[in-house]
Image: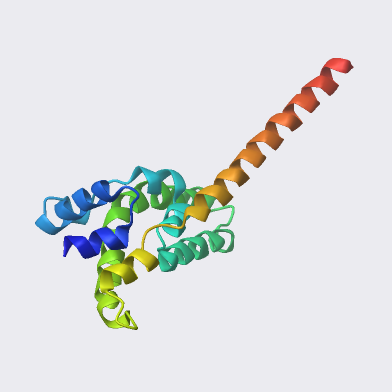
Length: 162
């Protein structure tokens, strides 16, 4: 079964996730709680990167609802709920959700492989990560940071000219 799970995880951080999955299977992880720093820092981007599209959409919808439920009298409470969700709950349960995602992908591979393609080959083709997420959002982050620095420098130079 490990070969199927490895194929579904892909080549990136395979050992890390196999170790986390073993803890989850052995029950050594308290109530299925572990910690995932990538999920802490990147949230929905990590989910998209790991091809967890349903969780990614759910998290984005969750964030789109924030302005709808936040009012001046409850904005601190709503803000706290969103912070706890993003920076505590999601990183705590990310490995468990990914484990379930990989398990479901492995189960479905046995029924979905076509033209006598072996399930492991099917998992290698459909599993793994979306490399483009790193490039697109990494590039976007560089552009935003670079633009912010440039705007700051232009503002400072304009201030100094006066």
